[in-house]
Image 1 (cartoon, one colour):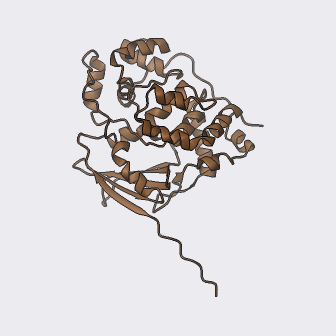
Image 2 (cartoon, rainbow, N blue to C red; image 1 turned 180 degrees about the vertical axis):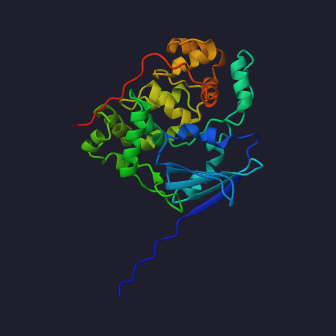
Image 3 (cartoon, one colour; image 1 turned 135 degrees about the vertical axis):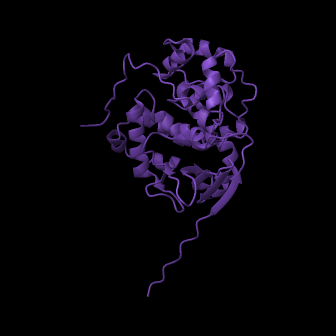
Length: 320
């Protein structure tokens, strides 16, 4: 009779975080989700057992982790994590949910639109995951292509090369591949997913220095000094660095210059007309130091620019 060794128990950690101010859990973590079907996130509907819950996976320095967050009626957040990285991610729950993101000196009086939008969504904060490589990879996928194309490719490769979420996670919840695993993805699978060689090379370049990228989280909440370090990766420019810092570092000011749509959204919201990147920066200049917070207000408010003008076409980089 063959005796099978028992699997080691999955590490479990819990905490209750009580934010000092109102917190909108879904909107605060919204920027981390990469579209419908993101395999690293799941939503649990409300039931007789309690309010709705949000599940996310993370690849921490200690290993994979699954995090479940549920907000009680009093605003407190019950957090439970599983996996080798459970303790690390639980320690970071306050910053993940916006602790240290200080909006107190943000003056919105010059803009009635911003003032009203912020009044209706005061619970929005900037998340800070501290996981720089993990935030950079999907940003690289989104370079110079449509969001639909980027999310589809990311979803396909994470499902294929990631690992099942530890703990009692919802079916299909997946931890994104480690840097080492990304480097083993065959070239033909990048093509099948619709990722062109330029972007796949950039992911591989980032994976080769992933630990160094993650160390930049200790340098604070972004800024030009961090951006310079991120842009030292071949293929990573100002836009990718900004998208990464907004999520991993909780950068309150860096703007994603070079985005296909963003400048027009800001222009229509703040000036009632489309503008280019220079025009966007000019409109945001009165709020320097808070420009990413202004962007979060605009985007989280649900504001949409008028539906006309050229649309970016979906490109197919796969072999036929």
